[in-house]
Length: 274
Length: 37
Image 1 (cartoon, rainbow over the protein chains, first blue to last red):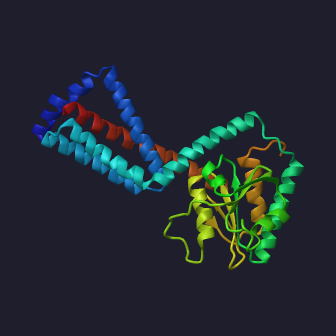
Image 2 (tube, rainbow over the protein chains, first blue to last red):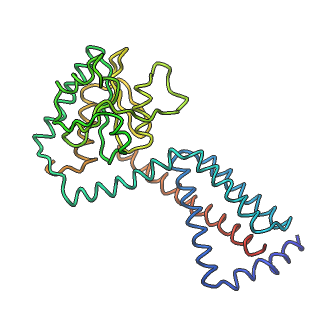
Image 3 (cartoon, one colour):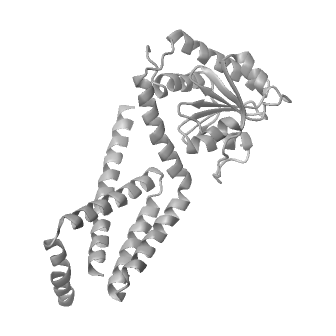
């Protein structure tokens, strides 16, 4: 113990006594990068990984000091864990990056003011709900993505650009079985159907119930990586589900759909004139 | 509803506080190691 205290007073205390500008900047940068990493892990319910990360950093630091490792080896050991975390959480990182971009974009849009009249919004909501209920009644599978962010070009390009006003007849026609576009997703942006027949990234979540097919996986998958809402109608059961932030809510009734669409138009898009 | 919001704000503040402490400790450990080797 006395040996340890003398080691600390002889070697560690002088480090903090002789702090210069470069050392302070290094310390602050280290603190910020570790804090950002821990916050990202905590936001994605990966607090266990944070514990392992802390233990790993402490262990390799102690080992490096005891075994007098080279700085390069210490860096390699530190970076290897960070690379593992980045690979493990690539989807979450993608989502947080895209979401940051979208929030900036929305604020720009607010500055330019997204101008949609209240009447027009209500009309869009009614048309979408009518289409969803009709398809649910007739067991027609469908997937609608309410986009409040710039959907990556690859998703739009995988389908057919439409850029048409929202109408229940058009939505139902697109999803009518055996039509060329019925298998993909519709991308709705503001009061327009931007594209149809689009392919979405599938969720790789292993805990999803077996009755949820590819369409549901696509709906959940797109909300995992983008800040969007997806509405899915099951082809087998006609059940309407709402996916947001990688989570799915099943058995959505007209009230729930209205609430989701209102949130999309009034909160996500920050439409004026509520 | 308000109770729920209050709870989530509290847990968020607690999470950030814990992360600040842990980051501070880890940054100190890494900083000391970098200066010793």
